[in-house]
Image (cartoon, rainbow, N blue to C red; front, top):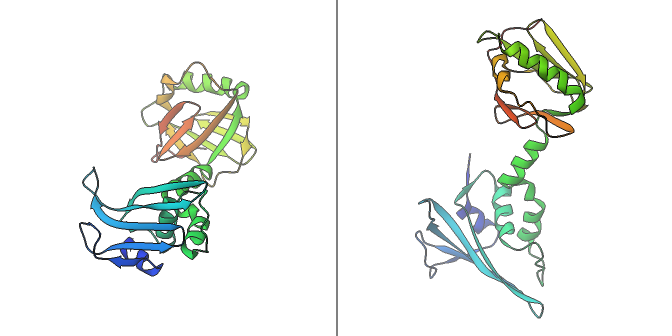
Length: 230
């Protein structure tokens, strides 16, 4: 369930501003010491409604900075909304008096969408394999792919120490480093006929992200209907 940014602004102390130019009144304003922020709902260049956050950061005599950021009108949670507003303020800005939502929003940075995606990427199932160890299994997969039936699968499994690829009757184990995977992942064996002949990196990253199995530079669609492997 999404949370309206309009409600969050009110909860953290932004005052209604009926003089602000906005597509949906009221706008909002926050003034505290050396920080002044306005929030107005507008339509962006993609014809989507957003809140345009503008304002000034007064760090004189060192600097006088401007604020401008478009943020969603609805977010996943209260914490994410506060983090969005805090993100509009530069990280180097120091208020002359404490601002609770700014301090909390900076602590909630991990709720921001790109931070969540980066965390999910770091937590994805993956492991690292030496190029020298992967070279022969890769050649075997390519050879098998040339005569593989359409429904044949190559299944990748990793127990935290050994990456094993099952392809037909072939079992291809190799040492690898990383965190054990909770499940196996399969791709169509036939697609390995187009696998790159040259492996560019000394250490290969093999993992799953956004519905694909990544092997070095190659990306393969996951094959969820793979036949059971022995």
